[in-house]
Length: 412
Image (cartoon, rainbow, N blue to C red; front, top):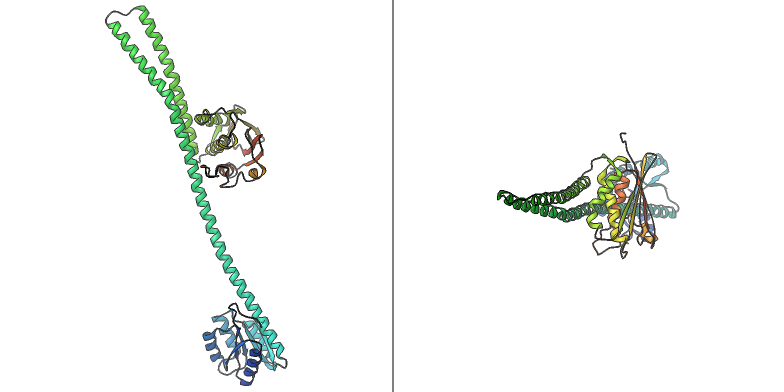
């Protein structure tokens, strides 16, 4: 005997207008551990189905008031999942087949001379009903878990997007702070030069007005003017260069505009914007590539990729290394740009190398590292620049990245 999912004996309802048959079914079923209730016609049977919700129904076809076929249709419409076994005489076999088409699970031909046939049919139907119930429960749980997983994925995407944006803003903030600090020096020298020139002009004017100016005073005044102008001009040019480079990099990083740009010059601008960070170290950056090579792409994404690679070398690759070297090589191959980035830092283990582009992977956990820098690089190269990036690394020898991106349509 099979038990239901609640571990109670299965409840079976027998619907038949012949009391003798109902009682014989009841006796054999109860002897085998089933719980049995009875109904003498279809109307009473439906009422008991609604009250007790049996696990299985044994139903005759030929009954007064409401026949078995009507019961099958009503059960399927109202309950759907309760198995109904038709018990019919040989003379109404076609009706039994019609009942199966209407939703009955099986049919038995009476009289039943061997009650084992009844028990086997009941057990088979209950097994099938139990399997269907378990599958439905599994499916519902699977759907629930799928929805939960989808929500977690969406939440992770939102969190990742927020962290990526925060990292971009932090990088831009570092750039602003670095350039602001760096620009103070040439501006300060320029102000000093102009102040000196102003004082020298007043002193010479005073001597000239009093008629005390000599040729030597004039020569000295002109020399002072030339020196002050040269110092002021050179430092103002440097300040302007800092501002221009910062402005272009900042605009590119905060926009998604596509344009044609000279790769070598743009790399120099990126390095210039990172100069305040690099100059605090003894590390060096060497760039090799054609002076006239251009590409039509997204300079903002290009800038973020290169900036993250350089900062990754400074923070991770050159940890405990006093003077590291970064080499950036650019060349054209067919209609693609090949950028090779290499540092001679401490490198990575094979396990670290496999996770280098994974989101939230960092060796600086707890020290401010989000683990999104290289994941951002991978996404920018593969999605924004429509290219490919690969990484190889050897412990104590350094890390090597190869980036291949289409150069786009460039007017000659």
